[in-house]
Length: 308
Ligand code: NAD
Image 1 (cartoon, rainbow, N blue to C red):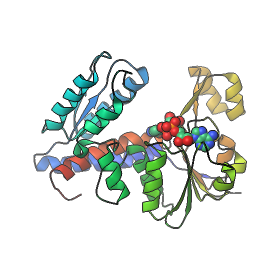
Image 2: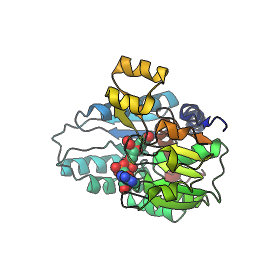
Image 3: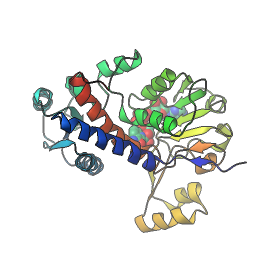
């Protein structure tokens, strides 16, 4: 058995970000500076970390960014008013509403209020429909990043059996459509799928987007396949650590230092059978922000009728 190839998300994200920075420079010559507005409601620590890193990346790449931080008492009506203002702003090309939102805010209504032209998360039904029908659109960042990962790593997609575990609107469904557009033969599995291993064992490309630590085990994997692990699960107990990482001294150092570590939806033992795989962390994760930047530049161009 050959050693599996590790698909390095950080390296590919760096590449994409360099390309975005170059495009931002080209647009600057025409007097255009793509701008992203991030709306962060209340104080959810994980959201604060994500949004800060998105804003910081904008600054690094030369995009304009604007952080709006309403209190967690904000109403749906007030949020709708805020979105309407952002939709109308000429200096803003992308609007990002960080989820989760407080309970009293109707998230669905709000995401549909974002102008599809500025919907850099690709969640608006208009963009979902356009992607489905193969028209120019803004695709959700994580799935779009996964396609970039496969293409830039020279992994063929056309004609391959792709099996996606998970059917969420954010990952499972859109990655299935994007893989189909690349001419893969796509099977979507989910919590009601009977005999999951009978599908996954046939996967040349296996996408795990479940949200359950180490759920994909070695007997579910086709030897030599490509595994994209989207799951991000934090483990904090010694028992869990030993379940996934027994004998992994490098991981153990981090675990002891931080008191936790991340594991994907794929058991590390299952990766050993793969031809190539995305590690957790450092696989699919870093691509999300890179694609958000890329989508913001894309939105700036699409909105002005510039060629992509
Ligand atoms: P979700 O909870 O919305 O969806 C999970 C899906 O898994 C569901 O469609 C469900 O049908 C399926 N599922 C659940 N149990 C199953 C089972 N036993 N067998 C088969 N299918 C099962 O989650 P999501 O938003 O799609 O996220 C999935 C994971 O990806 C999470 O760990 C999340 O943190 C991570 N994630 C990472 C990124 C990133 O790397 N940037 C982005 C989004 C999500």
